[in-house]
Image (cartoon, rainbow, N blue to C red; front, top):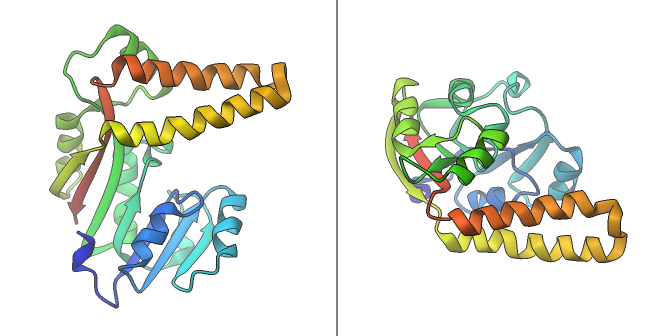
Length: 208
């Protein structure tokens, strides 16, 4: 999708974190506006002084102060904060006619997932749905679905491996003070390991 970008192509990265996706998008665009709720993430990204990335603090569902629309709206692993359907409706306000939107969302890979996986996600994100369910929401929200793909297992390993290493270091340094956090991190990774064929993140590429 990014191959169609031109020198005048402007992107909006919602829930940008410290800017991993923004940096990739910036290679194909004139400018990227990166938005995150946490000021420390915004400051860290701005400290890198990447000429065509402008990071600002803000709520992804209230960016009227920008007073502009974008060729690309990108939201990776963050739309769950406001909900998939609501996010699609709000993000339309930031997207130009015929603009593209790329959203990643946790999905079931099976119609009948395991009880353990269902209980875990019901307590963490009950709006999880199948790919077919998310596609239906996209179409009913007035977007044309261009394509989608599911993140491979390796992507989860790339996430959990450093996370577990950090948790171990925290445990060694702070002991019982971080016991609950460390146990939750390990439990989450174990849930995934036992149920990795049941769920993953899917990237949906759509057009207004």
